[in-house]
Length: 165
Image (cartoon, one colour):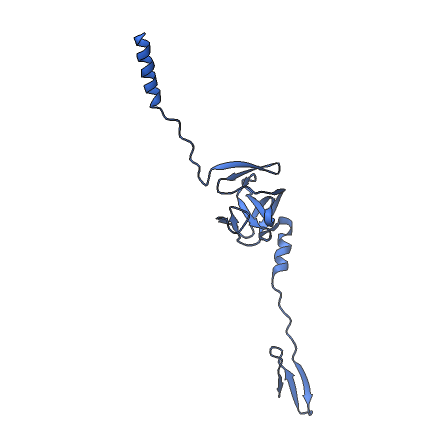
């Protein structure tokens, strides 16, 4: 009987010194999954899942080096910059007309959000770039009239004043 009590106390003392295994450390790079509007999104911990999500799943190209944000708003953290002309996969459109992006290498992982006008469909990229280029303006002709058959007066196109020659 005494031996049982001694063994029981010894077991209790041994087990009481044990600690629970530590919880895994959550960092910004920890991969998480979220479900929004029936779509499962995989993302890093720093990227907050959207409240609304409309799936697109098409290739888009960056028009300029926009900031990829952690939330679909300018108040979020900047995660990285888009590379102009680089192809990205738009997973969907989220609240405030922002786009949820993934890279071509990992089409399933949400990397962050960019404004709607930062990317354009890949098929329309060349057309959009050509349309955005400044075109040379035609030079305005000087408006001249003859005065007394021996001299003339010309209107300056920039200032609108008349100069008599």
